Amino acid sequence: MKALMQTQEFITASDVYKATFGSHLNDVASPSRAVPIEVSYSEQQQAQLAYFLRLLKQANEENRWIMFIGQDALLDKQLLINAGIDINKVLLLKNAKNQSKHLLMAKALEMGNCSAVIVTGEIEEFNTPIITTAAEQGKTLAFVLNQNIKAQLTFH
View (cartoon, one colour):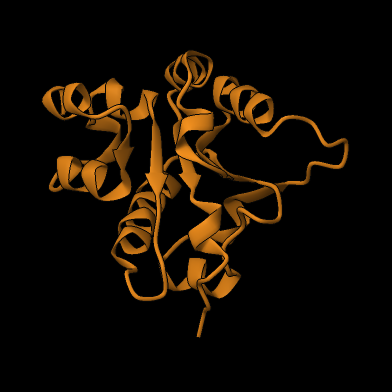
């Protein structure tokens, strides 16, 4: 995983899933938890979505929440259920005060009450030392859904 991290500025859901294949998410070296994980997918290419859902299912096994920041980050409820995710452990943080998503994500990560925090945007916006440190402190996975591609996805 360290070699992967040295060659890229960010990692994808498939990178993390493949690096953890055959081991439980809690056993993964901390660097994979400390960097934002990009999830880009389209209607034609849903492999990243499948890897993302598998990682969320593993994170859901922890006795912590899965938090989506903003309605635009929330995935279809039936999709989550079909992926084996207990939706009773899923939170949606609505950004009523229009605070920075970056700040909201950092706070959610460092609190440690969540096993995963998901936001939409460009990976470059969230691949910062503040997010990395917060994810490391909270031992929380940080996911960034690419909003430009996500908007094109339809659920059946």
